Image 1 (cartoon, one colour):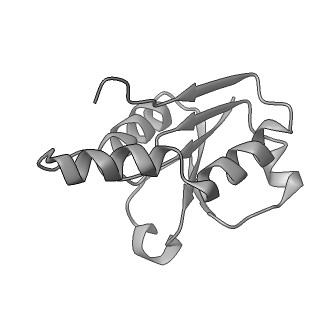
Image 2: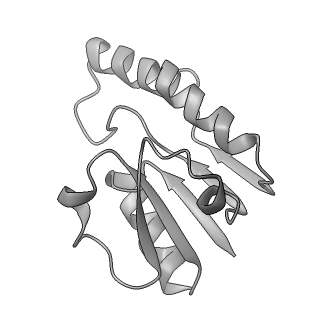
Length: 116
């Protein structure tokens, strides 16, 4: 099973990617900076440029885990909370998710912050 993790280089995403790859799932990590994260992961993980529109690669995905946005491992001030919320609904995120959802995804796991 192929799993795409948007936000897989973040605090929570890295742990999820590690767990999934250790269970022998093929994991694709959507990232804005492939060079920075090239050595962050071990087996069964492929980094994918955030701007990809490659339908062949995306058609392999069975599950999308959407964690991207403002990092959560920081002091949660009023300003930070606003950034976290804005990051979860950013236009670029919506556009990318729409592209992926237009394919044959079996499951979507979306990190949504409620009552922040």
